[in-house]
Length: 149
Image 1: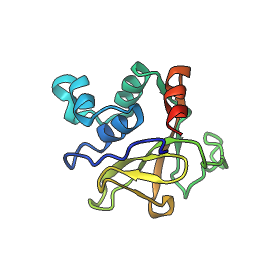
Image 2 (image 1 turned 90 degrees about the vertical axis):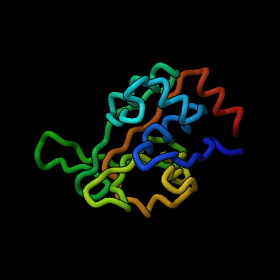
Image 3 (image 1 turned 180 degrees about the vertical axis):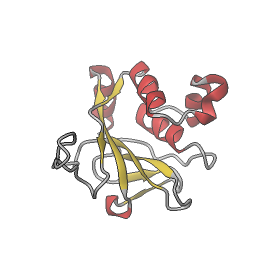
């Protein structure tokens, strides 16, 4: 069985909301309505953090990949990290393929990328990762996911 249900974003500007819906097992309409009047504009990391925490899911340590897919320790403010991504779901922010200078939210299910812009799974190597937000689940959410496996 699949860990997350793939969804296609309803508009060009609802990729993060669609990823949040896939993570929580809800609808995109629910995510947008949860944020109220500004639901279609909820694009900040803080928005995702608040929404997911309310639903028993947490974004873990933030990793920003400015130089390739690792961090540079030379500046003494950033540590180089090598980590395994397999079987570790995460919310990813990647460079948009459609719009120059724009970002796009996708969901890494631990095996493949669920891309809401096309509503299908894709390979990780197709994307340039800008931000990596691992997902941490409460026991209740973990059981929901475990039952889906």
